[in-house]
Amino acid sequence: MRPDLNAMALFVRVVEHKSFTKASKRLGMPISTVSRKVSELEKSLCIRLLERSTRGLRLTETGKEYFQYCRRALEEFEAGALMISNRQSEVAGTLRLSIPPNIADVLVAPIICDYQQHYPKTRVNVLVTERYVDLIEDGVDIALRVGELEDSMLAARRLLNYRHLLVASPSYIKECGVPKKPDDLVTHRLLSFSGWREQTIWEFFNGKKSQKILVESYLSINEMVGLHYAAEHHHGIANLPAFSCSQALERGTLVEVMPEWRFAPTVLSAIYPSNRNTSRLVKLFMDCCTRHIKEHVLYTGI
Image (cartoon, rainbow, N blue to C red; front, top):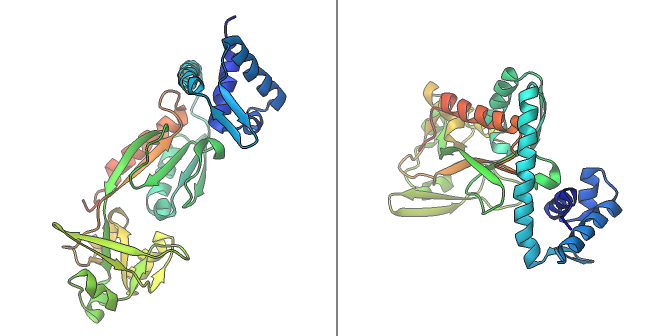
């Protein structure tokens, strides 16, 4: 008996959603149908693919290997259908993004505006959150992440390498003096990006030397525009991404503080569910990100 291709597809979705119930809701099918189809697939193969219990689902060893084959086959089918659809239709639809709050205003909003100027029939829904969303569970097409990525079955593209800088207004420096080393910062008003409860620690590097300081923030806020405003208005020394304060540095409304002690570089990446059947909207947005960063992000601090 040949396996049912529809049952194979349902098996893949159940594994991705980690639940028959969630898969059936996302697919708009009765849970009884999904469960029956997967059971019939197991029967046709004469093998158990999933162990079911009150705690949830667990792939058997054979199920893990079979899932990889099924997922690749499903991606090929969907990629073929997508290719036909893309050739027959204009660029339209809704793109769902998840982005961290520290880049929402200064980087991502201009990219989205550029994207929609090129493709005016697209809609973009953005979730600004510090939470690492589950792309499949939350229905997100692309998530932008700051920092090194953990190993994942998701596809990823590095968009930008950059460094944070310590900056302050010339008036603040004239009034309060220039810190020379990290320990000097304890006597200054420090403006930090942080949430309500967690400790803020800054780590600096100077050649082979490194030093950490516990930051007693004069102002802490999980939003970069507010920090930028406070720094330009002589409120203290702020920790800002280089790309977000490059224009202020050019104008002279901000100056870099303690440049010989540097923050470690970091990376901005985009992750999305699959490399093979990536939707046209996702591909075009990724291309727009790359183009915008190349043309407009002129200073990264690296």
